Image (tube, rainbow, N blue to C red; front, side, top):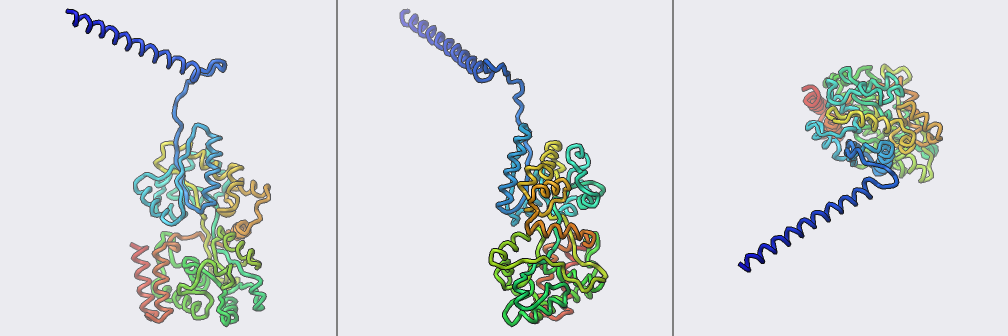
Amino acid sequence: MIRSGKKKTRKKNNAGRFIIGILLLLIFFGINYYFVVYKPGTHTVVTDTKKNTIITFGWWGNDDRHLYTLAGVDLFEKKHPNVEVNCSYSVWNGYERRNRVYMLSGKEPDVMQINFNWIREYSADGLGYYDLDKLSDIIDLSAYSKKDLSYGMSGGVLNAVPIAYNAVVFYYNQDMLDQYGLKVPETWDDLFAAASVMQKDGRYPLHLSDKHLFLFVVAHYEQETGQTLFDQDGKYTGGTDAAGKLLKFYKKLFDGQVICTGGKSNDTDFSNGTCAGVGIWASDADNYCTQLQANGASPVLASPPRISEHDALYGWYVKPATMYAISNHTSHPKEAAKLLNFLVDNKDMVLLQGTEKGIPVSAKARRILKHSGTLNSYDAEAGDYVFRNLKHFETMVPSIENADVITAFRDEADKYAYGIANLDTCALELTASWKATLNS
């Protein structure tokens, strides 16, 4: 009996301690709410505990682009405190492959930097990206001309807005030309004449990447024949005769030492004095010209080579360098539109970006840069040249930039140039390869 009474006493004591513990916790949370949430003296009561709207933003580029874009995103978040932006970015290598996975799985970022040819690839019917016309109350489309917006149209739907234009431009080392008593080349004949003078010293008139070399050869073909190689649907329409003409001109460039080929050429050939000139995207002008200038030489911008002023076709193409689009799967289109508009039109963002992506297409952004006095770089000079000559340029057909198309050309061109196979064989193989890639 005595033991039983002790057990009951212990149970009562334990129950009392439990109740006291609960009361202490309630008092603690009450005090915490009073001083932390209610904040006496300010009379501010938390009435909305909703989490931020989270959107995603993806782009590619170099470290400089990453840094200024991240700084711009910080400014956007301060301007829109209820919107959080998660960023994904990298260099170009591998980005296109990841983008393909994202697009096919519907997991692409809400706002994304895209290539011009991706509209045709992922939105041939206009439904692959969000219709920006539906967000025109947020995105200031008045900053773009109808021609500007036409580059982002597909199936009657505005899929994207261009950030800047890009075309191949040519810069020459004026000091090197003066050394050889040469004028700035204006025609194809001028380039061959320059090569004949420079080759004794192991120098070349031009450095061209594989892509720009292909565009170079295409331009000559179109000027000479008045015919295009690819239709607006991207199909190859030239046949073996056209392929043969391209290969013959490549070999002429090779034999005449107008270009450095065979794996001997690299991106420093212009700045180190191996080549007198370079054909590059307008948006890359600073990368090439500032280094040449740092080495004590004078870069000079020149028009692309022509046969004459009366060529049947101009032969040179323009495209948006990059574009901004919004995912058709976004759950937050209005917030995404606010970010897109900020990226292209906000004064602070425009000044952060400058001309790193080229001269902005947005008229508002161009005015901001002009008034700030920042349009004085080689990128700006090259971009202004493209703007002034837009009426001459043809709109880039994405097939011309297709990596498989360019690789096939380079493979067959080298086989012909080095005597591994004859012209007829290489032309047939090139035509078959292009049709398999583009016409199926």
